Length: 121
Image (cartoon, rainbow, N blue to C red; front, side, top):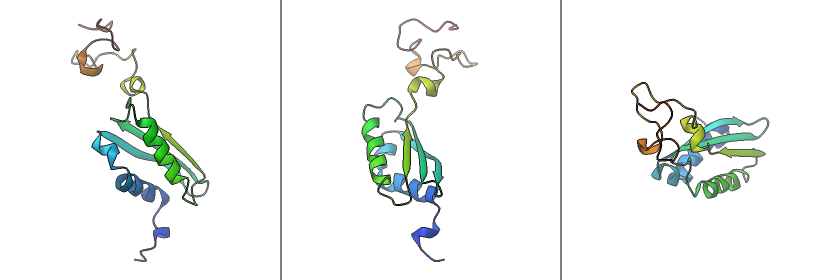
């Protein structure tokens, strides 16, 4: 075991950074996943989900992640994606579950309206 940080893959180092330096993500019910970390091209793609999707401060979080990781000499390009909650849930066209339960937040109907979805029981 050399103990050198250079021996640790870039993806693993980015994951450790997110866990160690960005605990607010998990504290607020969010998740993070390193989708790509290519040391040859310097491209890193991170996706935030869970509580980050639709969060008012997600832009600040993504900006902080980008600003820090761009200081790493091996990273040339960083993309932090936060899926739109509608994409995560399948959008307004997503059918109900097989149990007949509305999948929209809190089961309150079709995407923020008081009307149930078209296939509501």
